[in-house]
Amino acid sequence: MLSRRTLMLAPAAGLIAVPAKAVTAALRVAFVYVSPVGDAGWTFQHELGRRALDAAMGAAVRTSFVENVEEGADAERVIRKLAADGNDLIFTTSFGYMNPTLKVAGSFPGKKFEHATGYKRSVNLATYSARFYEGRYAAGVLAGRMSKSGIFGYVAAFPIPEVLQGINAFTLGARSVNPKATTKVVWTSSWFDPGKERAAADTLIAGGADVVTHHTDSTAVAQAAEEKGVFSIAYNSDQSKYGPKTCLSAITHDWSAYYIRRVKAVLDGSWKSIDTWGGVKEGMTKLAPFNAAVPEAVRKEVAGVMAAIGAGTRKPFAGPLADQDGKIKVPAGQAMADKDIAEMKWFVDGVQGKI
Image (cartoon, rainbow, N blue to C red; front, side):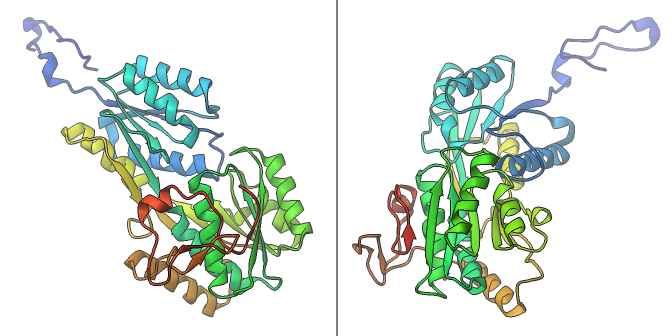
């Protein structure tokens, strides 16, 4: 097997020297995950993207990952070690990795970094995310059609804009078909804690929610709903096997095309530090197959909503929109700009919870 050094082979054997430049080393690409890979959830979807990258690029890349890395000081240690160990491109896949990634990127100007869901960039640090709220709006329509109580439960991790967007879009989607719909929110203060997620779901179900959803990483909410006999709409991955009777669908994320595109950009020298925010149109946000319990008319309606969002003819945050206190945040005839969506720090009317 050829190494990166020049291989001097004996002329007597009929062989010649092979210059080192003829041997191309694989691009080393590393991923940092906030939770265990498992078989569903946020990290699992990024892992599917990594696997797709391997399959598409073959010997041109050599990928690795570190899972279950806590946000904060531990994240900086892991990212720094990956850079020092020779990785050329590092993807850090949780919001709390933002500052550690920025700090390490400054120490390794010759390396390239990409951070998921953050907003701080530098010359060698890019950011990327998906418009999760687009799928959330369609999921709200689904929940609104399937609910009898009009009360929905939402298990949420942290009150950052990404999560608030999802809660608000879900509520607006539900209210588009049931103007009296209400979303109750319980915070877990953790991205991945099945025990807390399960307890939050149980509390919401006990409070009258007959459809529950979540912005957390485990399958606990789908499992709790299945056991209690109420509907769920999963997040990140298709979790139907954890709720075969009650999991109506899921908002799913597909990072494969993005990872392949960005690695190719490094290889061909076109990589630049940019911010990417893709949604339904770009195939980064999708809905999983519907449960058999969903009537055909509802399936068509929700699919139509997704298509309209992808075409840009339906805006989840179109006015008039009021906050919890009744103050108009978006006037009639207008839609929120991306900048305002990205900085969202308020709840729409219809959400019961505090930020």
